[in-house]
Length: 464
Ligand code: AMP
Ligand code: ZN
Image: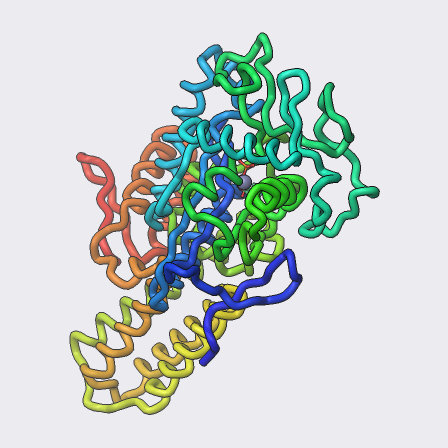
């Protein structure tokens, strides 16, 4: 077995052990979405990866506190609100609610805290004041900027040198082109603002995470996560703000997931996206989870129907194994199958070793499928495993799947909600004479081990 869970640290470029804080808790902060539209499958990747990481660590006996913010003040929110003709606070509230509803459908539980920027203005303003007191920030024309050249470690996370960096954020009153805004004065076309010692305005983007991470997890917490696109400037700036103000490390390990891609970059502002809700309607949560987790979180993941169909086939293989075990348990033999007993031990060790080693979910899946093959072999031979062994193997498979958020695949004589939704979508497709789509949905339902029948009261779904 391994020595305990480890993760790759973007800062040190090494795989390092996760060390709980003095309170014994593994604190994890993940940058969540800007809520100006429905979230896409790419945004769901950090949500899934860090929720399942928490789940795994908890099952391994660790206390974990997962925090993931919602950015509910931002230029993109003002712009989207103007386009929709609604107040920006109302727009952010609406898409915040939709984000919760969409991610709830993944059935991975909620993070322990989901702070909103609009609820943390006092902490944000307090942090900016501390930075000004330390001469790490200055007020200019109603804005406040971070003074990058007063923070020598700037650039360590992204591996950039200050003299090579190009400013991304224009600002009229900056003293140095790389300085970035902590507070922005109120503009005439912005309909939400707050009072501050520097006049009316709103916080910059980066300062919110520094303030909310400190409010919820303190200093030097275990893991700071998010997508790779956030390393520079967002996370570089978070480090500068938090460490500049406190003199302590912000987080021990900086963990970044690679991007989900759709041809090229999948990003809301480019409009090149597949919404999470549409993917869930089409494929169901089990397939989305398997699709996301069967690739390592630090590898690029192209989104394609072929990839999703492969994941659907794997879901079917797992459901079939669970079903075969249930059938066998109804008529057990009297053999203890040595090979199967051995396979259970091997699978558990390989599974835990894989997830401890930089959360290697593809290797963990490989361990599960190795066990499934051993199960299928054991159920084919004449000398059937006895009831005790079948129960033990079933419990083991259920435990491994549960650590990946997939325990539901074990007990599905109850029809999962997503399959009922697919059956209704199939009905609608037939009514619209879209028979290709109707057939595709029927195949997915059958692939999951169910049959769909049309009745005068609507579709009926039953186990095959
Ligand atoms: P955003 O709303 O763009 O700030 O994104 C919210 C979270 O999703 C951040 O952690 C991003 O790094 C992450 N993210 C955004 N787009 C993708 C993508 N295509 N693939 C993976 N993660 C992404
Ligand atoms: Zn952040």
